[in-house]
Length: 197
Image 1 (cartoon, one colour):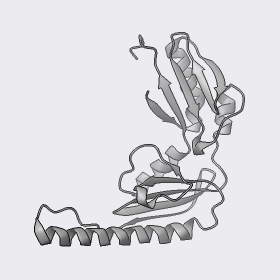
Image 2 (cartoon, one colour; image 1 turned 120 degrees about the vertical axis):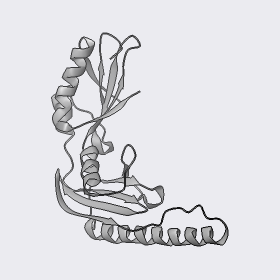
Image 3 (cartoon, one colour; image 1 turned 135 degrees about the horizontal axis):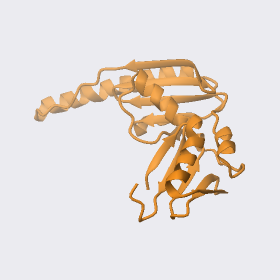
Image 4 (cartoon, helix red, strand yellow; image 1 turned 90 degrees about the horizontal axis):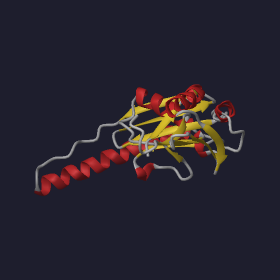
């Protein structure tokens, strides 16, 4: 089933478009999500960002109001070659840092050379992870809201919320996209078998 991230400002329009394409939509609340079903058999399930359960009215406006970001939350992206961290107050970034560290690429050489390069690459990756830890500790100190994480598994903080999809090497634009994605509602859509759209 296709999944799509929908910004809070677009939730009402997305549901209206679903209803237009499929001949209407009946909304309900089930299992902590807003659900929609159309006369043609197409359905969607909409989940709030930050792994929150929805228990409000079966209404697009009420769902959008419940999707607002918390007052204090953070984003941490870590790859072997870099990191990005941000602290947010609602939708506004209050502090951030993006860093890049050189990690040598793989070599096709064999024997001792390959092992030497592998050790160097592992050491460079370790230094990059340590830099990410230092900046994350400084920027996210005292964080009371959720932490959204994307990147390599070995750097994933316990209790964090995983971002959907692949995370590119952290740069400013990648961090900005991750912040937007973290605040978006996740819609899972199942089109009716006869629906070609």
